[in-house]
Length: 536
Ligand code: FAD
Image (cartoon, rainbow, N blue to C red; front, side, top):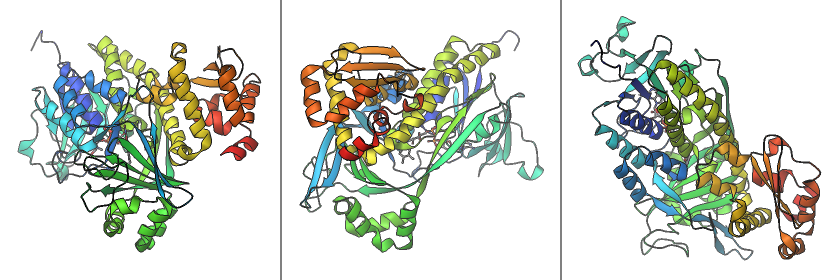
């Protein structure tokens, strides 16, 4: 109609957590939103999410929460937060020299902040329920993106098990007559590609933009397990309470050289657990599943008892053994018509608990740019350009940090050096807040500071009386004085550690590639191997 202002028509590809939140942001801005999801309705119990298991639990932290908060949906935020279980720290499970089982609680934050356990499926459901209340959103399940022309602004979707008459209005059918009833063509102004690690949106975007792309698999597979709620007869650990077989307010870790087992609490008092181990370990157990229980007893003391020895082999055999992929690409957009978000843009290994949080934060950040400038295609192109420029370095950084955190989770948590670093960081966090010190973990999990800024701060400890800062090659050095008494205390325990730090910092032995993993910098890479060997 002449004079009518064109409403932005936005297609969201993928109805996972990132796609559902993107659609919510777009709908709140009055856009016409269509969400296309390859699978059936994810709220339906029979639908298994792609690349995930049905019940995987995730750690939700500040970045994800802030993104939901800014979706202008206060009831949704309450619902999500109420469904979460606080996890105040890690609980490290092991065995002492006498073969007794041990539990050691390591808090995430000495100011009492915590991360939250959330059921991925439940979170997805809450987001979709909220979307369904909005008149300008259409949810289209069983629709798979098969092609997109980002210049002509046309996309193609294959429908599964849907008759022609139930297709949305204004969609024309074309192409191969055999596919007539199954493929639809849809016009759009903007595609938000939120279709996960194996993204079709990214694949088609690549034909239009010179995208740098890097993917790698790590030699680790994962398999889900479940610890049932505790009963009067079932095995419990000393920290068990409120019907949970072990502490409900921790992320539980059984570290073991190149493998680990973790458990995250669920609302029904069970724990969703994950075994991470090299491919060869999985292969050996697949060849002889009767060894699964023994494998657990040797590597993760006490875990098999909690899982119930009767079910442990069955769980290993019946749950899928899935890979871990890491993806970096740049840019994340093309012109004014396409942008990829979430795992589609930056799938990462799960060891910092940030994959989904980063994806939800993408949504907040991209819309902050679009809000400044989205009324015209030119404005949208400028907004997406600015978004990619800001977000690519952040995505690359959290991807690197997630890799580095694998060491921390499966080995670092038991290393005296890690524990020393943690103590020093907590001390600084507590005593020198005026100098702006916060641990890397708290900046990542309890703030929305840009990931690239978090990693660009390198903390150096010195036993001199001076604290100092200095600008390095794209990063900031912050030197904290440990002062007389404290330096003396550390010096007594770790004489050469403090000396080395003092000697190495002014000698300029800090190299840019050290920056993405503070923990590695301070205690792994940076110190002479002789000291590492002596202390770890
Ligand atoms: P996805 O969840 O993959 O959703 C993509 C959607 O797109 C799917 O529904 C899929 O069916 C659909 N789709 C795919 N292709 C098409 C197509 N062609 N057309 C239409 N639709 C399509 N993150 C955290 O923040 N904290 C954690 O503690 C954490 N733990 C994790 C533990 C494990 C073992 C793993 C594997 C991951 C973990 N993550 C964690 C990462 C987190 O699960 C992902 O980052 C998050 O699910 C990504 O959400 P997404 O919406 O971008 O993609």
